Length: 354
Figure 1: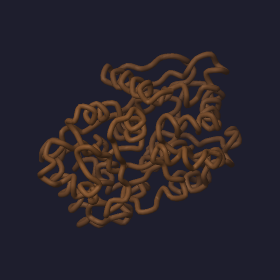
Figure 2: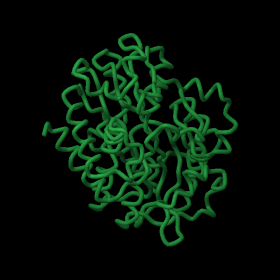
Figure 3: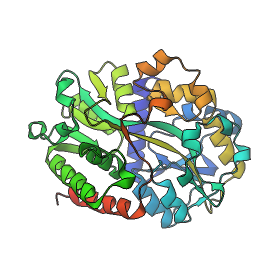
């Protein structure tokens, strides 16, 4: 699939989100997911076996997803990222994974698979799938490498109205903590949190828009309205593949951020258990691994299949190996509950101009 087609899928998905609708197919399996992940290239063998894709419902960020699920929204699977999983476990939203039904469980990167925060009472509640960075993305015709050598560029008044960061509390605070020299937010002090919040308040006047999905950010960057963004691998991969002058810089003075996302089985889901595991097994096939790398620019947690992808292919989409993912980064590990709740509340105030 071309990068253009991939962006078109994301645009369509964003429209679905705005309409508050779902993408309805197989009524026996409902996936609560980020826009764009209904792309059949990720789980083609599921469609081959069952004749249609699952039904997809969409969320814009994980806190929105959490609140909706806690209010009774029904789904069989969801796609949270690393820092949210413990909160979802403690809220009783998830049920344990039957690892014996996951064909390639042993092929998963143990650095993602065996994280203690994804386990409780000897049970596992998270299947790692996709990983990558949140890093500096910039227009190479309007900015030089020197212009983006530091994350302080986001707060520089000369960039007023020309930057975008995600409407996502975790990525926003990853940027802010890094800018203050914090690379392990699980140990952040109250003073470091206050400094990170102050940085985001300095950034806010420079923000043209808080992007909610890759397609909206791509449009802002294609038009030239935005020339500097804090964004995922996807933006660099898709836009550079289309010939746009887009660069990615992970080696700023302060570094970048890194994360892993994956699927969870929802407690109380009324869909088919068999189809849930068929969906997961389809995602873990080598052809799905190759697809997410080449079409989306993300890494995959299937380490055995990733090892078969040529280094030059990984380099062409700006992707490091999973072994190097966390080097010089703020790893988006689960943070203490109290800190994350403060981050959520403060980010909403900052976006509102307070």
